[in-house]
Length: 208
Image (cartoon, rainbow, N blue to C red; front, side, top):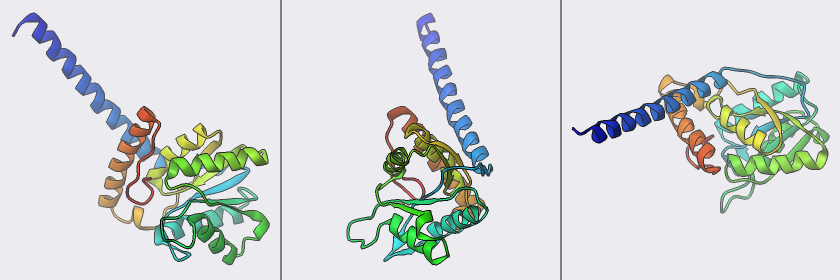
């Protein structure tokens, strides 16, 4: 091997190692963020949407809503914001289904705000950012699945919101270690894609 070839091989090896370290460090940060539970006094609790069926939240969405209800009852924020649009053919948006669920659980209408926009996390957080700006709000506690929390925080910050997360500990996303590992892998790819391209990615619940 020539001197130039050896140098190229070393450079390639260094780049591969750097890429592996980046992926590993991102996955570790997602794992760490998933285990945090921040509950600062905030302007609003923001519940990231997930699937709903004719106005009835899916099990993943219901787990998020129940956690948001608990935070509201604990006085973390005076308002709960539900966010998310609807798929083609749906009669209800995720935001509307979430708002109606929480209203049925006893949260008064003046403490609920539905933002019925967004087909993925990025669109939803931008819509919430606009709603916050219109009301002069700045701080939020985000409720989503644990593995989704770090990317949701980053997108919220990029939308002008000072955000921390209080992930739900219930629901299908946290049932088994295999499920958790799969979500961490997907979120690692989604987070790195967002940081590099500024774009979101659709996928399993909580990955959009």
